[in-house]
Length: 316
Figure 1 (tube, rainbow, N blue to C red):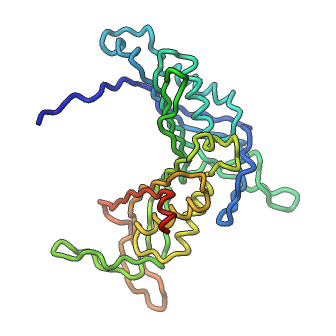
Figure 2: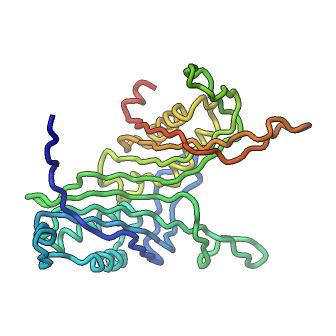
Figure 3: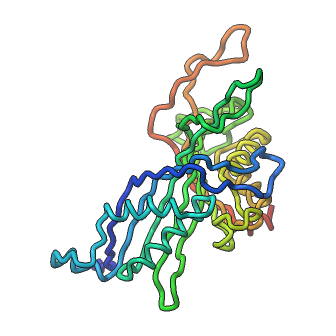
């Protein structure tokens, strides 16, 4: 059988567009859940790293003929994104991704397609000692090196206006370890098996979580009661990990997904990408101690992908 040409894709863009807005609109009025202390974001620093792609048939001559007459320079895209962060009146990454995508299509009629990946640049609140007590500083913050949120949006021009073809919210590079209460037994054993069974092991997982709303507008945060914050997803995942006996990463993902969808019925589904970074044992027994000594695992690493939907709750 002969291969057939695929549909021609025409796009270009700009990555690592860093933008920091101070004193953006705070996020407040969210629906609180018992598993999380999160109540909102002050947004004193609203930092984001954006990757933008634009496309359309109008750009084909720039590839085939060297005709740049309709080309929007990628440097102009950078300036466009950064300046629109100043005029954005919302409080969420998802809302900004939608706002700047619509602005691109409105400004440049030659664009048929725009994709925005906006990653959060988190800053941790630092303590301030004042008047013999500690409180949160509203001036000094520490740039976080931990997990980060992301908004993904793709928008196309249609005869009637614009249409969102893909939208999701994410938390990336969440690293969680549970030191006991995890097992891995009962798996297939054959001539290729060298891994021993373990009835009580540390479990160290790297997680990317992606959630999709039933209604696209709920992702923007205009109605904060419908908005699901990444901080709440992290706290739910941690709570589930703490409370269950974990026979496998697969089971952990399913339980977290069900907990998220039960807490937030406005979500359509949750997708997990995970890697197993469980430590290798170096010293199995330490006299007069329940502890052991471990080291970093050697690659390659096992990985998993699973999507939990609202239909799973009906069977739960």
